[in-house]
Image (cartoon, rainbow over the protein chains, first blue to last red):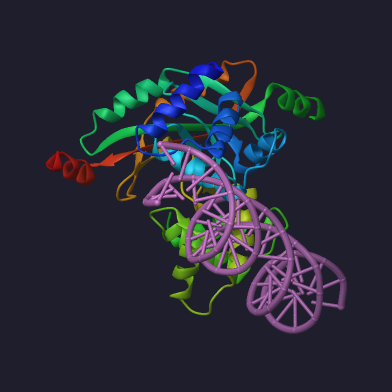
Amino acid sequence: MDAYHAAVELDAALRSHGHRVTRARREVWDVLVGADEHLSAQGILDRIDGGDAPINESSVYRTLALFAELGLVRESRLDETATWELFHDDAAIHLVCADCALVIHHDTDLVHDLRRALEQRSDFSPVDIDVRVTGRCHNCASVGTQMA
Amino acid sequence: MDAYHAAVELDAALRSHGHRVTRARREVWDVLVGADEHLSAQGILDRIDGGDAPINESSVYRTLALFAELGLVRESRLDETATWELFHDDAAIHLVCADCALVIHHDTDLVHDLRRALEQRSDFSPVDIDVRVTGRCHNCASVGTQMA
DNA sequence: ATTCTTGCAAAAGATTTGCAGGATG
DNA sequence: CATCCTGCAAATCTTTTGCAAGAAT
């Protein structure tokens, strides 16, 4: 998503629900659009500080809550602190290295399989599927092997 | 797992790693063995209070951290507060109702499939797979239908 | 102009930590 | 009896909230 379309999307999403377009919201949005990873509230703040005038912590939280409500972002609680990323409706799952905390995005249609399987249950209608795999990335795994 | 075997397992796990068997650890363990759901630290405390002398909050946290380190329990962060349950190496995934917060445990070997698929990647060795599905349970889904 | 948002500071809630006394091996 | 654990209270950290001033429509 390029900057122009990102801005238009934010604008439309906000206005169509009667919300105002403010600097805080644009800044947070820009950071999320530019991020290749999920970011914590602090991570977002840090990346905004690098720019011009700072945005207050609480404004970031309020903005993220609003974005989530509008379906623009998704909140994860993979770790002790919450993180956010742009919403994307794909089959990505997260592979988290237990040693170095590297996060790999991995696409697999097993998520779709799982969704299909769940949809056949009469007692639960799935909406959101979140898969987190903990393990060891290539680097950390090979370090462990050398020590053995 | 009956009470006898549960006690023996805890005893062995602790002693084999040089840790002592204390009342706090037994109490927390008993609660977890008897629980049919994941419990928060507070939930564990509440269930202990019902018994005899109370156990301190911080002891519960320290105990849970130790249990997790020994692989006896698994910590989840499905919600804003962490919850714990006995470790069980099965294919259970969690179905969480977005409306009433009901949690359904669902067994599916798609988790094993996913593990197998991941093990073929050269760059990541999976250890733990955690699947959380948000959606609507039968009850809440039918309420939504009636309103439409 | 009106009402929505922000910044600030304080509050709230969960989890962690230091330390002295008590329990365990 | 030497050391590990616990309880207590205070600290820490993330997230939330009230309120007056500032910005957007």
